[in-house]
Each structure stands twice: as C-alpha cells, then as structure tokens.
Image (tube, rainbow, N blue to C red; front, side, top):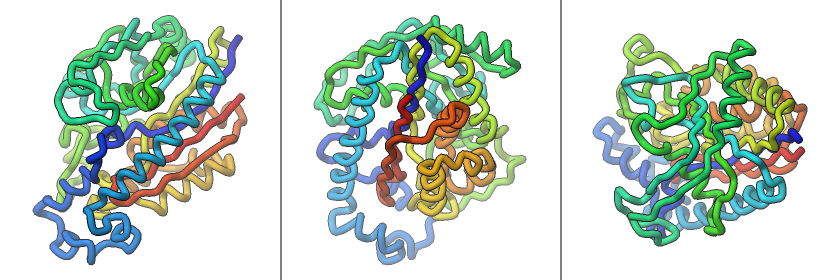
Length: 348
C-alpha cells in the first residue's frame, strides 16, 4: 500500500573523519591568495566563529559538532526503521562525479540493480576505523525507478534515468546517506533509489564541484548553464509525491545535504555560511510556510551558498503537495565546519 515518509539530513564528508576531525574547507580557504589579509586571522572574523575556532583551530568544536550530528542521524534512522520502507528515494547532488563534461542532466533517476562502493579506498581515516578495502553493497530498486521515471515523463516532466553508472559506482551524496543512516553499523537493509540533482550548475565544471577562488568575479556568460531552479526542484518533489501516492510502494523521500556552504558563499569570502538565509528558511520549514520556499530564486540560492539545498527543495515540494509539516526538526549551527545542518521528519 502506498505511503510516503519525508526525511531531511546531511551527508557532509568531513563528518565521517576520525578523532582528528578538523575544519578542512576553512583551512584551505585561509591559504587562498585572494583572501584579504585581515581575514586570515581570527581577529577579523565574527565573534561566533572566533569562539568555535578557539585555541585549537576548531578541533574541539569539530568533535562536538560531529557528535551532535551523529545523535540526529540516529533519530532519523529510528524514524526510518519505524516506517519500514520498500524503497529509500534520496535527492542528492552529483558533485562532478558521474556527471561531468560528457553530460550534465538537471535531474537523473539512478535505477541501478545494486550499488557497490569502497568509500575509503583513496586513503585517510574514518570514524569507524574501517579498512581502505572495505566494500559496501546496497540493493537498488530498478522497479520503482522505472515506475517513477515513466510516470514523470508521461506527465510532461522531462526526467533522465540511468541503469548503470558512468564514472563512479555512486556519488558521495548517496554513499554518505547510506553510511550515515547506518552510523551504528547495524546494516542498511533498504533498497536505495538515488535521484541526482545538478545543484552546482554554473560552477560544476569550472571548479569540479568544489572550491572556487575567493576574489574571482565572473559573469554568468563566462560560466556554464545553471542548475534547475528552486521552483523546478519544488515541482519535481510535488510530482514525485503525486505519483508515489498512487504507487504500490512505501517510499521514504530523503533530502540529503547540508544548508549554506561557506566555500560557496562568496560574499563571506568563503569563510562561513549564510546563517541569516539559513535561519529564515528553517523558520519557514518549521511553520510549514512553503510559499517562502516556492518563491526563492536561483540567484538568491547562489548568493547565499545554498546550492545543495536544491535537494531540500525537492523534499519540501513533496511535503507541500501532501499538506504535511515537519513533526520534528533540528538546526545545528557551525561557522567553521563549513555548513549548518538541518534534520527533519515528516511522518505520515
């Protein structure tokens, strides 16, 4: 019988680091030659950020932030287990992984039979102390992927789909969604259906989905075509909700991303997130004020470094279509750890 659960979480890669977790993106920004000299030292930063940096370059804050995130992930997993979905449909960004110069679709349903990946093969420690050769195998759900893509196309929503990967087995947004929802390593028994969203748009190819230069100012004409608009992402989520409500599946819809990213927030010199913009959307989320979300423009998203939140716009569109407010939401703030993190559940 069809039923839909909504969940929101983060997939931020540094959170999987071991005890030596530190603010990695901020450290790189401090080495950028275009950063004004007065911002290379904590005395030039906002007071909140100076407190987080402390006297150990943010290490204490990073560990506390990691622990707080882990507790929220356990809550999300509990809701997921209580629901027992037939399929977990995750909206996540492809950050120059499967979609590069050969093709960049706005959206793509990854209807694979199975996902097999080695998240630690490139080295570095991880929170669980797992070896570099550790292989994870996760079931796909081609049947629901075909069902969703078919009905989207039949209803005039031009959706790309794939039955096998182009370049990597599974992008980090989806890998980390699985790894983080299994934080206690009890196993992840649910079939996964990723929907890749081109969140990085204009800068995806130029910066390979990561850090740009602090002082680089480029016109839109110099860059590549944009992401799908927040409104279009909202509409995709709404269309998915309508289709899944008539389907045979119990589906968990998951938005997987942090909110504004420091390394994408040029007006803050890539040092800290846009707390004000994030807090405004969070208040709207809590209130079920989805008109505020629906009215957000791509220019506003890019100005605030909220590129990856397009994944959340898909979820919010679905929840708006279902007339559902969050029954639980949590906002974890951090200036030095690159992004604020939001967790939410929308139970049936």
